[in-house]
Length: 160
Image (cartoon, rainbow, N blue to C red; front, side, top):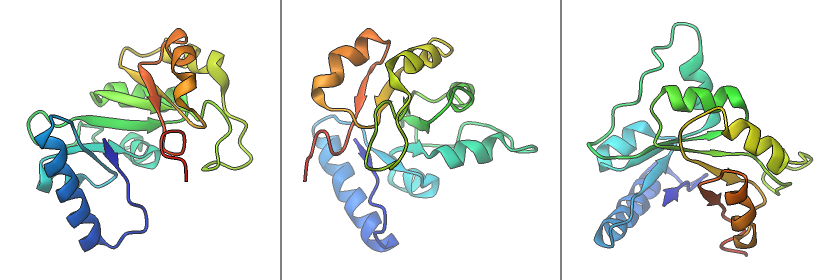
């Protein structure tokens, strides 16, 4: 489970993520905190890198090493093009989410890359890649036909 909590103040965010991590551990589920390497290390959970963080790791002079995490903690990344997927692989990410595959409210005006472009980019890396963007459980079969490990979804799984 990836925990994002955009807009939450730092103390409340830490409290909620710590509670969620305890509940997930109790049932054997992994937790990844979005974009906060320090909090991930502190709580002993995984880390999900934002695309901007990947870009910073790729900047000239950046070490581009895998961020230090607790033993066994997962590292994942959000990717929007083949270059970001390649960097995620080079960093040793355990998986990536890639898209948006379809139009989505989180990226207004962006049409989505479609399943053919997803499949082409996916073929260039050897890490598990989940489809992202405008996807619903009904998209899972098509996602797998195009090489996706699965789908990542918020609105599609928990509609308002």
